[in-house]
Structure formats: C-alpha cells, structure tokens
Amino acid sequence: SVGVSVVKATFEADVVAAIRDTDSTDDTITATGDVTVHADMERTEVRGQEAVTASVAAGATAIAGGGLGLINTVTNDVLAEVKGDVTITADELDVLAEENTVLTATAVATTIAIGASGAGALGVSVIRNETSSTTRSRIYGATVNARNVDVSSDSNTRIPQTLTAALSASTGVSGLVNIAYAQINNTVSAEIT
Image (tube, rainbow, N blue to C red; front, top):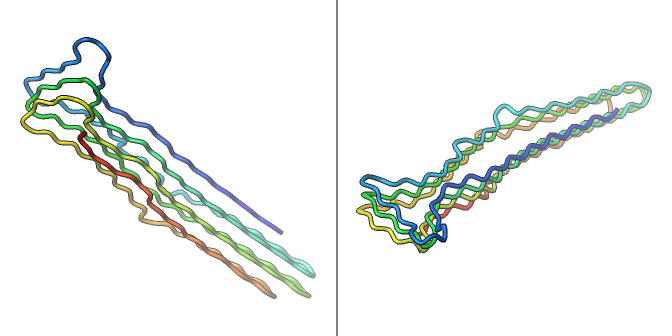
C-alpha cells in the first residue's frame, strides 16, 4: 500500500505606491502639510496549513509506504517611490514600504504494515516554508523641498512553526524520515539617489 500527498501553495503580490514624472511640463506637488507615499503589503498569512497521509498494508507479506510534502512559498514585491523629474514641496515627505508575512505548517505521515511472513513500512514527511520578498523605498531623480524626509522599508517575516512528523510501524522492518525547512531570503532597501 502506498499513499502520497503533495500540497503546494505559492503567494505572490506586487504592491506599488508612487509619484512619477508624467512627461508633462509641470510635475509639481505643493502641500501645506505632509506628503506620504506608502506601499503596504499588510499581511500575507498562511496559518494552520495541515496535511496528513496514511498508508496501511496487511497480508502474508505486507509493504506500506506513505509520503507527504507541504511547500509554501511567498514572493512579494513592495515598492514605494518618488521618481523622475518631479518637484515636491511639503512640510514632510514620507516614502514608506512595508511587508508582513506569517507562515505556519504541520505535516504528518503514517504507515503501518502487518505481515505473517514479512512486513516493511516507510513514512516520509517534508515541509518547506520559504520567503523571497523584495521591499524597497526610494527617491530617485526628484527635487524635494521639505523640512523632514523619511525614506524607510520594513520587512517582517515570521515562521513560528514548521512541524513535521512521521510514524512508521511494522511487524518486520520500519523506517521514517522527517525534514522541516524554513528559509527567509528577503531583500530590503531604502535609498535616495
């Protein structure tokens, strides 16, 4: 008896907030207060994702195998910018980019083999949680007349739980493999050029 389950979830979002040159003769913003350019990927959340697979075999010679793969990938692109031949006059200019991600997952594989003359069971459970997001804020080629200028980027990724379990039982030989993998590969930048 063989049981295999694969669950794959991919999350991608592009969030842009921008003031850009429109190629018109006058790209000017004049404000008596503050000007804010804010790109916010408020929350990419994968919580409570669970997967279970089971395989049971019985007979004179019984062989059971169960495998489970659970893959979560997040690749967001968040950009806040003031770009080009633009003039901004304000008390304060804020260019802010934010991204928040939460990933949790649980995988369980169970195999049982019962045989009179021989039995074998193998259980495999694999989880992979990975983020590769880009969060950028920038002022590029613009003229800014302000008392205060804030250009900032913030990426907050949490992977509080990556749990995998495999159970393998047999009247003969049994084995199990558990792999839990969590990786954060985010790029964050804030610049004025």
